[in-house]
Image (cartoon, rainbow, N blue to C red; front, side):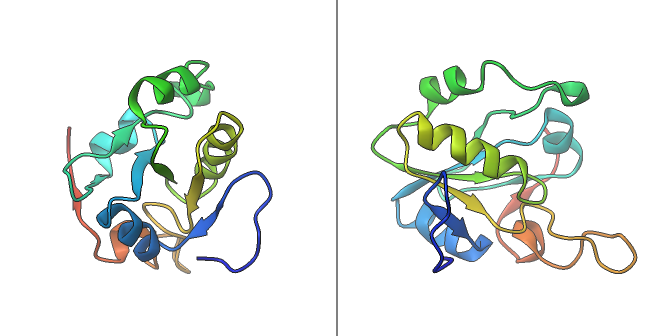
Length: 138
């Protein structure tokens, strides 16, 4: 985990650190990407199977006004939450919102797809490129 304190949420984790927290049962993975991203790019798997899927933004980039309500309905308060998006930006906002609502929350650095390489392809790092469990399709 990043050794520097992060304002607004518990901290940033590498994909492997996030996996380790999820695998040991201290955290729940929450993917905040869009339905289209889940269906066409792939989804992370957690040791229990599917992580929670709660969109931060809806189609067209419209903010999901029901995000916290959906999180409240699905996420246990006694577990830490690990937020994942494509590249680690939406997940920061989600971690900040969840922290303000009472969860201990982390952001996954590099996101699901990772940062673009010199050709613009997302092949460098991230959950998917780290060899962590994934699935394609809905």
